[in-house]
Length: 120
Length: 106
Image 1 (cartoon, rainbow over the protein chains, first blue to last red):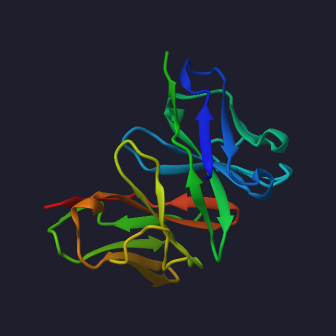
Image 2: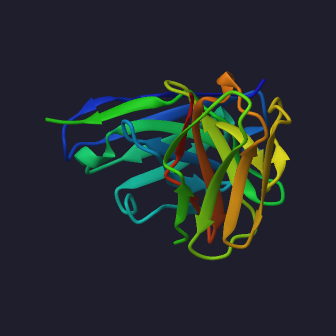
């Protein structure tokens, strides 16, 4: 059974840093691109980052580029999101998701999410 | 960046009623995918590659479309279909999501 379990969330002050982790199991982690998606309270879904199978390629939207860094450790089947210079608008539930390429590219498994609150 | 516009934002349907949710893209996309999300839960893949149902999705659901216009249809609304539905596309190494359609039962 595929499982994605996020951890590392919490309350952090504006301008500070936080690192999220996602532990993957039930599939060959190194074979899949992975992504982070967030959802602000009562809002919609926003893509945050994608990483290639080896970790050599990473992609971000402008809203987090230069502040967030996605990484992975295939030996540990783990995905990470380093978030720096956090802003109040980064407050959200952060989901780890597996990327799959069928005909199109979509996210076929999601974790339960971890809450990040940026507030003084 | 391709922007996805969903309509309606919210809607209520009676049991047995046909429901259609639309997703329009600012530029042509090859495929559209849909997720269902219930309160307090993670999004679930619902329809992928425009018209394929994810595992466990009832066949009263269907997806269609091409180019810049896509839709999710429920042939006969049931109480359990109450949820928010999001469309999603991928292009130029970026995912974008629609703003969501909240579907309620009358």
